[in-house]
Every structure is written in structure tokens, then in C-alpha cells.
Image (tube, rainbow, N blue to C red):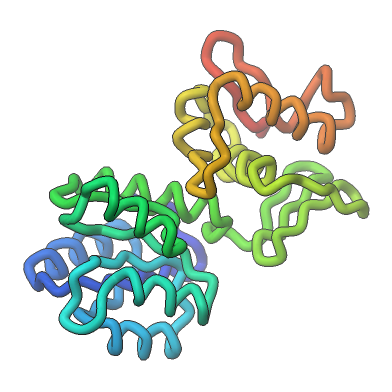
Length: 230
């Protein structure tokens, strides 16, 4: 099951197919999510004004308006991560959705576990799973996007920040290079491959480790990948 916080992850589902709403709501609630659903843009915006959602799942075809304009309206009001869940899986639809500010895009039909993995990945990237992450004297305030070491602020690029969040939200787990690349895939257009990942990890270590040559936060697991120390 999804790792619960003190409060369940509040999720907005905007979908006009009632069969999908019923099945997806049941699945996500069983995984620990607090699900609110509606079929159109007007009702969705009322819910957005009323509740502080952690993430939103949007279809493109709605009873009123469309998912693209709804995504833009949501982003204009609140910083809520958005995943498009749509039958329109062609390249144009995907690119348009991401250009509208979406954090991810998954095409129908999809496997529920795949969608769950995408949701968890976006929540980790956006720092929505926990407000403050700590590792020794490293502290990340995910609300303010602030990283400190001791009492000093550490300045990270957007991608370095995202990589650090992946490690801190997966402490003790070995993360393969492939898994890391999947987690930090950058919809903003920055191309990250295996070689540049090595460079980014080196830069992060230089900024946060007491001894970058003997890291305690981001450790190398030979032949397997990396992990954040316990």
C-alpha cells in the first residue's frame, strides 16, 4: 500500500467515464488515498478552491471544458501536481499536455499499478510526500524548496534538487541508475543520460557531503547503483 502520512494524500480525479471513476476510486482508496471526483471543469475548480489537493488526475475530454484548460487553470491558482490520464496517447496530445504544465501523462488503457507508480513518482519529485526531509545535518524543506546543511543554505539546480529528493524519499533502498533516470525524467526539456547523471551526483556530493570522496548521504553500491545512507 501507499505509505501513509499523518493525513492521507488528497487526490482530485476529473473523469467523465463513471465506470473508470468507480473502479479507480476504489483502487486508490484501498491504497490509502483520499479521493474526490467530478466530471467537468467547473466542478473541478470548485473543489480546487475548497480543498488543498496533493495531486490531480485529469482526463482531456470532460463534460464541460477540457483537461488542457483545466490544467492551466489549476496551475494558475495552486501549485498542484497534475497527471493526464487520457485515451489520447498520440505524440501531439502528450506534448500538449506537458506544455500545459502537467507533471506526467499516462495513456488509457493503463494498468492500475502503473498509474500508482506514476503518482508516487510525481509526489516524490514534487516533495509532496513529506514536508521536511532530513539526513544528518542535511535538511530539505519541500514547501519552501530550501536545502540547508547545518545553518547554511545549499544552492542546488532544479535537477540536483530533484535527484536529492529521490534519494531522501528512498532512504536505505538501492536505486539503479535506470531507476534514477526514470525518476528524474525532465519534462522541462533537460536531457539526462547515464553520463550526465554521474556528473549531477558528483555535483550534489560536492555541495552536501563533508567528504565527497567518502559520501555518507549518497553512497555508491558497486554493480547495483546508489542509495541514501540510513
